[in-house]
Picture (cartoon, rainbow, N blue to C red):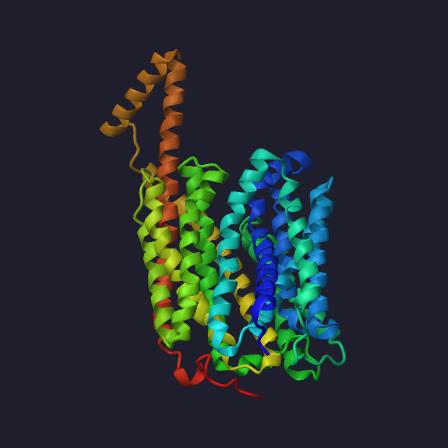
Length: 517
């Protein structure tokens, strides 16, 4: 039964706070990697394990949250996860070696993986069926805003304090959320019953998902299939996941209830969520890199660049929830959202090296409007045909698909970016020859400029060639980033016709009764 009054909004504050700190921690460390590397005496390549370990733990736990909630009781498991996340944050900040930091980040990821899906399940139980679009909108605030403000907050903390404080800021929020959780969150009436523990399924899930996530996180760095480790783990992930699916469909007590995917609505929404994760994470990944490498922005400036779009999202999310409650078809909202998101990446594919804050303002505002139109109706539809006891599993499956979509998106974009950088550089260099008049004029001006600053003629020529190479590299990177935006635009446009295949009969509106099993 839905909560009312003061208790209802205390629960909202509790679960959103927990979800936001989990999502912030997926991106806040990115801006502190250099400081961590210097402090711990590790290479940048090795320090990347701080990100990889968290992501692997996160994606392992998410599909198991329904099982673990049923095993220990949802409130107990949720509160324990908050405390594990908070304690691990404390030990991350007090780590004195890379090994310690990676271990505690993994534990932090294990705690954090539960916060996302369980928070959403608690929200859906707190609101009535008719109010679920609003619940999805409220949850969307954390999903969209958390990763956006992460780099900004991280940059400010690193600039004004030191990198351990990016973890210490979680402590008061986590402890408060844990206390409120034990005080106000109730056990659901429709609890999943857990019989014999499916240890084989748990092991296969851990091996399969961990191997897959490692491949996606480290593939580009390790040159993909030129690396024996990547090859072995790719084969391992395929075998383990195939066996896992077979196991879960045949065992009497599965750790992941795959039967929920018999709901065509959930299966289709999970696919759309994967697409959103792919496009959202890959495009958000490119913008900070573009701003910092080509526009010379620091972490704080980059965060402020993304802030207007996040603020627009904050205002649009509740509005989308309300208009869906009033009967606007989910298909219309999703189609509009995908169209606006495609427009956002298309506009970014037209920018130049003269880009400034205002160049990004329009496209990011468009994205801020489009994302809620995708997120809210898809999240609501995903669980609309499920029995209450299956909602936690449906939510977990949906969240896992978004995480995997993001991992696939970043991995593919990173690889594609590498190929485009090589191709674009070759294409530009082909036009730069000693016989080209424009090249000779530019070199002459550069040499004169360096000589006027005190360099000898021989050194000035070396500096001129280096400066010219820098110009070529900037143009190369610009063209490559624009190619990425074109790629993501095409990806969203190609997916538009799929939205039209959603049938109203397979996606009951929130006001319709929940189908029983």
